[in-house]
Length: 395
Image 1 (tube, rainbow, N blue to C red):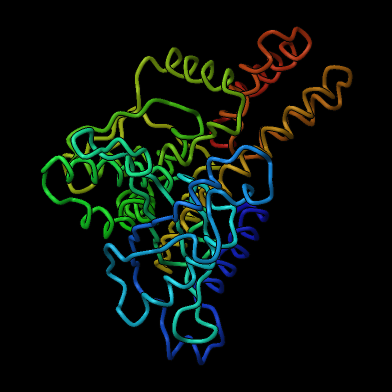
Image 2 (cartoon, rainbow, N blue to C red):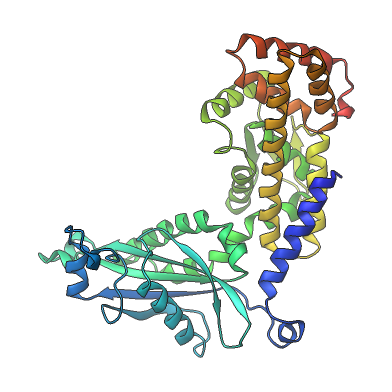
């Protein structure tokens, strides 16, 4: 196990567990962390607030147009699975947040909210969103052409939920679609959708780890190398979980988009086939899959994290996995730049590729990036020849 890997995992696990439990050890025994909850509020601003929102004169009264203060808005409970004695506390918390401003439609925020017991805190994602009414329900008054809501999801810690903030923003779009279907006279899926947020957003990575166990190394390798993956003979939930894991684990967004596209094409041309995951039996079977020491080390980190049963920890491990891969890629690029003018630096490149555990993938990444650079291209070509003479197990 790489020392930097283990140190980062230990630190993140302790921080996540500490932030989710909160308070002293005695308080934690008295008040264990709750399961996930949700609250949906109908939000209504006053006509005065609407006028301020439409103001473009640059006056101070228009700076907090999205979230008016004081009595300029009201929150009415539409649906929740939070205990009735705790809901007023959450409502008060959300009202204070709205009155402070900086809450924008469609962009969620994450904070810690203290409920009931002093020192006991839980992570809270909250988002203000606008729901357009159907044409048959609209009026000539534009003020009534849409309804506004505030949705709150509670569970884990502030740090834990922050890891999923972008996914939760997307989840709100699904909520709006469900509300549209209900308005059209369809089945009532809104309550089920709200109550499933934790299972649908936070738990997929955990389910994939439990499903694949040691085989997770193949999935990590496919994500890191941007190799296409096909899932066969699987139910839709498992298929969604696998593709969600691959999406989160890939370096997309961290490596230049053009490099990613070229890398995907290169991997497809090289292998002429995708990685196949056959889920027809109780234990999935992989075909055309690859692995390396780097992915095997991180696979073990996931299995070690599974013992604690903390779904937020798995996402943190994935973020650390990507961070280490990017660090290794940047180090290799630096060595290659040095090797263009220094033969000893070329040897350093070779030794780095041998010892980093993911030399097979890193070399492909830099090869794609340096395709149009003659000096760097020649260095990469020499490294490829060196690595061909190295047994694959040394990667």
